Length: 74
Image (cartoon, rainbow, N blue to C red; front, top):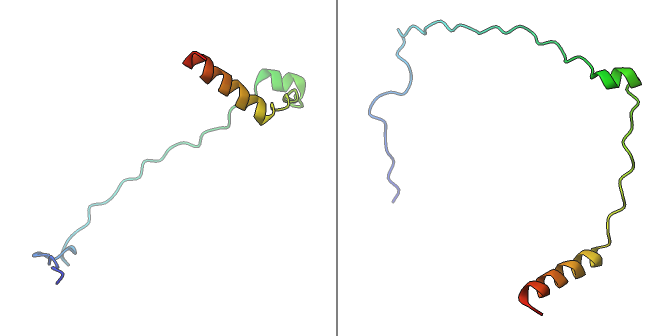
């Protein structure tokens, strides 16, 4: 059998309850940041160099294997 805890007092505000007025904190609208000087100088068309290709998974595996075995003294 499940027990239900009943509230002893009503959870709603009484009908004659006056809600206190809320004040809103108005913030000024923030302006966007100015462009970085180098971007403005280069016209914003700066590209990153190409990434190097990832190493094959087996190269990583055998490097980790040799490191582990070297640490164990083999």
